[in-house]
Length: 156
Image (cartoon, rainbow, N blue to C red; front, top):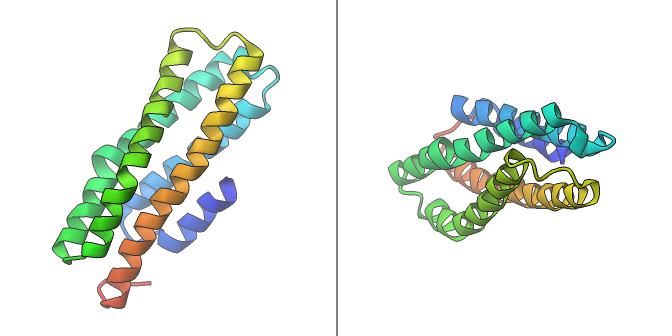
Protein backbone atom coordinates (compact mmCIF):
# COMPACT_ATOMS: atom_id res chain seq x y z
CA UNK A 1 0.00 0.00 0.00
CA UNK A 2 2.82 2.45 0.86
CA UNK A 3 4.59 1.74 -2.44
CA UNK A 4 1.55 2.85 -4.42
CA UNK A 5 1.39 5.95 -2.24
CA UNK A 6 5.01 6.82 -3.09
CA UNK A 7 4.39 6.13 -6.79
CA UNK A 8 1.43 8.51 -6.76
CA UNK A 9 3.58 11.23 -5.19
CA UNK A 10 6.18 10.77 -7.94
CA UNK A 11 3.59 10.87 -10.74
CA UNK A 12 1.48 13.80 -9.59
CA UNK A 13 3.50 15.63 -6.97
CA UNK A 14 3.76 19.28 -7.95
CA UNK A 15 0.72 19.20 -10.26
CA UNK A 16 -1.25 21.08 -7.67
CA UNK A 17 -0.52 22.05 -4.06
CA UNK A 18 -3.84 20.63 -2.94
CA UNK A 19 -3.02 17.21 -4.38
CA UNK A 20 0.48 17.38 -2.88
CA UNK A 21 -0.92 18.05 0.58
CA UNK A 22 -3.56 15.35 0.15
CA UNK A 23 -0.96 12.79 -0.99
CA UNK A 24 1.07 13.58 2.14
CA UNK A 25 -2.06 12.86 4.18
CA UNK A 26 -2.38 9.56 2.33
CA UNK A 27 1.19 8.65 3.24
CA UNK A 28 0.48 9.54 6.87
CA UNK A 29 -2.68 7.41 6.73
CA UNK A 30 -0.75 4.42 5.37
CA UNK A 31 1.94 4.80 8.03
CA UNK A 32 -0.72 5.05 10.75
CA UNK A 33 -2.45 1.97 9.38
CA UNK A 34 0.79 -0.02 9.43
CA UNK A 35 1.61 1.13 12.93
CA UNK A 36 -1.82 0.15 14.18
CA UNK A 37 -1.80 -3.16 12.30
CA UNK A 38 1.60 -4.07 13.74
CA UNK A 39 0.77 -3.10 17.35
CA UNK A 40 0.28 -6.11 19.63
CA UNK A 41 -2.58 -6.10 20.54
CA UNK A 42 -3.65 -3.35 18.17
CA UNK A 43 -6.88 -2.48 19.95
CA UNK A 44 -5.00 -1.73 23.18
CA UNK A 45 -3.11 1.08 21.50
CA UNK A 46 -5.86 3.65 22.08
CA UNK A 47 -3.68 6.61 21.13
CA UNK A 48 -2.64 4.90 17.90
CA UNK A 49 -6.21 4.01 16.96
CA UNK A 50 -7.42 7.52 17.84
CA UNK A 51 -4.61 9.11 15.81
CA UNK A 52 -5.24 6.77 12.88
CA UNK A 53 -8.96 7.51 12.90
CA UNK A 54 -8.33 11.26 12.96
CA UNK A 55 -6.08 10.99 9.90
CA UNK A 56 -8.58 8.63 8.23
CA UNK A 57 -11.44 11.10 8.64
CA UNK A 58 -9.27 14.02 7.49
CA UNK A 59 -8.15 12.07 4.42
CA UNK A 60 -11.57 10.96 3.24
CA UNK A 61 -13.01 14.41 3.99
CA UNK A 62 -10.30 16.16 2.00
CA UNK A 63 -11.12 14.03 -1.03
CA UNK A 64 -14.84 14.79 -0.83
CA UNK A 65 -14.67 18.45 0.10
CA UNK A 66 -11.51 19.63 -1.62
CA UNK A 67 -9.72 17.31 -4.04
CA UNK A 68 -12.60 15.96 -6.11
CA UNK A 69 -14.15 19.42 -6.31
CA UNK A 70 -10.88 20.81 -7.68
CA UNK A 71 -10.47 17.95 -10.15
CA UNK A 72 -14.03 18.31 -11.42
CA UNK A 73 -13.63 22.10 -11.71
CA UNK A 74 -10.45 21.66 -13.75
CA UNK A 75 -12.10 19.01 -15.93
CA UNK A 76 -15.00 21.36 -16.61
CA UNK A 77 -12.65 24.27 -17.33
CA UNK A 78 -10.76 22.16 -19.88
CA UNK A 79 -13.97 20.56 -21.18
CA UNK A 80 -12.54 17.18 -20.21
CA UNK A 81 -15.62 14.99 -20.59
CA UNK A 82 -13.57 11.80 -20.21
CA UNK A 83 -12.52 12.73 -16.68
CA UNK A 84 -16.01 13.93 -15.79
CA UNK A 85 -17.52 10.65 -16.97
CA UNK A 86 -14.90 8.68 -15.05
CA UNK A 87 -15.61 10.72 -11.92
CA UNK A 88 -19.31 9.91 -12.23
CA UNK A 89 -18.55 6.19 -12.52
CA UNK A 90 -15.92 6.04 -9.75
CA UNK A 91 -17.47 8.38 -7.18
CA UNK A 92 -20.19 6.00 -5.94
CA UNK A 93 -17.60 3.34 -5.01
CA UNK A 94 -15.38 5.93 -3.31
CA UNK A 95 -18.48 7.14 -1.43
CA UNK A 96 -19.21 3.55 -0.31
CA UNK A 97 -15.68 3.15 1.00
CA UNK A 98 -15.94 6.51 2.74
CA UNK A 99 -19.03 5.32 4.61
CA UNK A 100 -17.21 2.17 5.72
CA UNK A 101 -14.20 4.23 6.86
CA UNK A 102 -16.46 6.56 8.84
CA UNK A 103 -18.24 3.56 10.38
CA UNK A 104 -14.84 2.20 11.45
CA UNK A 105 -14.09 5.56 13.08
CA UNK A 106 -17.47 5.58 14.83
CA UNK A 107 -16.93 2.00 15.98
CA UNK A 108 -13.63 2.98 17.61
CA UNK A 109 -15.03 6.25 19.02
CA UNK A 110 -17.71 4.26 20.84
CA UNK A 111 -15.04 2.09 22.48
CA UNK A 112 -15.99 -1.02 20.50
CA UNK A 113 -12.41 -1.88 19.64
CA UNK A 114 -11.74 -4.08 22.67
CA UNK A 115 -12.14 -7.44 20.97
CA UNK A 116 -8.72 -8.18 19.40
CA UNK A 117 -10.00 -10.64 16.78
CA UNK A 118 -12.87 -8.44 15.66
CA UNK A 119 -10.69 -5.34 15.63
CA UNK A 120 -7.99 -7.09 13.57
CA UNK A 121 -10.62 -8.31 11.11
CA UNK A 122 -12.18 -4.84 10.73
CA UNK A 123 -8.76 -3.26 10.33
CA UNK A 124 -7.78 -5.79 7.64
CA UNK A 125 -11.05 -5.19 5.79
CA UNK A 126 -10.51 -1.44 5.98
CA UNK A 127 -6.95 -1.81 4.67
CA UNK A 128 -8.19 -3.71 1.64
CA UNK A 129 -10.84 -1.09 0.95
CA UNK A 130 -8.36 1.76 1.35
CA UNK A 131 -6.08 0.07 -1.18
CA UNK A 132 -9.01 -0.14 -3.62
CA UNK A 133 -9.88 3.49 -2.93
CA UNK A 134 -6.31 4.64 -3.57
CA UNK A 135 -6.37 2.89 -6.94
CA UNK A 136 -9.67 4.54 -7.88
CA UNK A 137 -8.46 7.97 -6.80
CA UNK A 138 -5.18 7.50 -8.66
CA UNK A 139 -7.04 6.43 -11.79
CA UNK A 140 -9.12 9.60 -11.80
CA UNK A 141 -6.13 11.84 -11.16
CA UNK A 142 -4.10 10.10 -13.85
CA UNK A 143 -6.82 10.48 -16.48
CA UNK A 144 -7.21 14.16 -15.63
CA UNK A 145 -3.47 14.81 -15.54
CA UNK A 146 -2.72 12.96 -18.78
CA UNK A 147 -5.52 14.62 -20.73
CA UNK A 148 -4.23 18.05 -19.74
CA UNK A 149 -0.64 16.99 -20.40
CA UNK A 150 -1.65 15.89 -23.91
CA UNK A 151 -3.08 19.36 -24.47
CA UNK A 152 0.20 20.87 -23.25
CA UNK A 153 -1.58 22.54 -20.36
CA UNK A 154 0.09 20.75 -17.46
CA UNK A 155 3.82 20.33 -17.00
CA UNK A 156 5.04 16.75 -16.60
